[in-house]
Image (cartoon, rainbow, N blue to C red; front, side, top):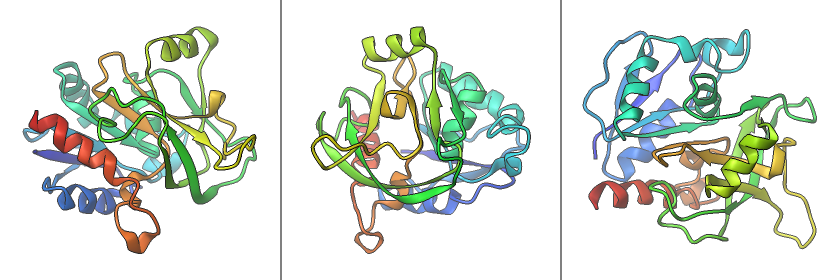
Length: 227
């Protein structure tokens, strides 16, 4: 599996993402946002951070970086694209995923472990999980409040494109950390080759970090690309 990680000014999780990919046999090329062409890649990962300092709107400036034209062309060809946290924001701002990420409902930055329910195993990103499985994965964001209009939300639900939802391990509890509509933590595009999610699976692959529940996502990618 050949992979690439896009680096913007303000990215701060590119090394974490690279380490996670390397652990699954896909050490990535780090690609600067001002580049115009991508190396041959089976997977493109847009990491977390604060691209362009989150000025104007999270992900809005990064979405117009030169490399994003190549990312869009690659996605159109069926290449897998994964956006994590700020990467999810960039994917929505660039039109690769619908909806928008707003300020957290609390108006505070949230950094802690959360529980996620796997909503679908029918994607190259989630095939190693079981639908309904609950994961523990960290978050670190101030703008993770996913919003989409009613028509878009219905389409996401009807087409099985909600990949992850926030949940609580306790009956009747709410595990939504940011006010995201329908507890959405991650979504897929129509072709199911683009995934955006706010939590950080790359920081849940080593027991020393408190959880290995992110491994399933990277294992899914290895299995999908080997198929």
